[in-house]
Length: 139
Image (tube, rainbow, N blue to C red; front, side):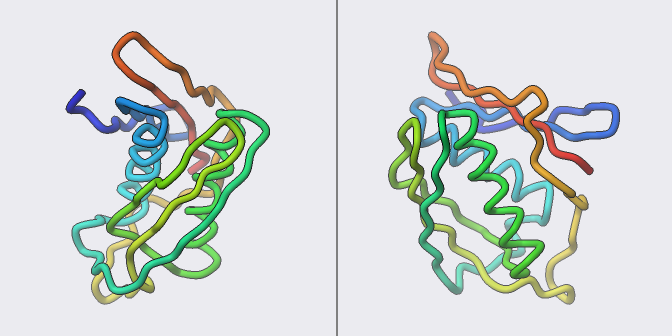
């Protein structure tokens, strides 16, 4: 599977459909999709590393919580990321490492203003060719 994610157009939202050979890679690629909507990750230096643990009630809840945490770190803490490494992903817990730096408006162009990660149409499924996750974001 070569495609990592695609951006989905929706009336008042934008969506991400992520693909992965395993559950860890589908969560990683969903995060990469979100990050690419926020800022061009190629402009972000790998200056610092943040470890985090996110919990959810099931795979979809975990997806929403995971992306919400990344959005919070941008909105609330002004952090941007160039690399995402999902170390562990089960049905109820995700452990990851985010590598990036503080947002710098002189170097980073903010792309899309994402207001929230929504439950609308959110899904995480195993397919015959791997995994797919889909989520819509309120813009």
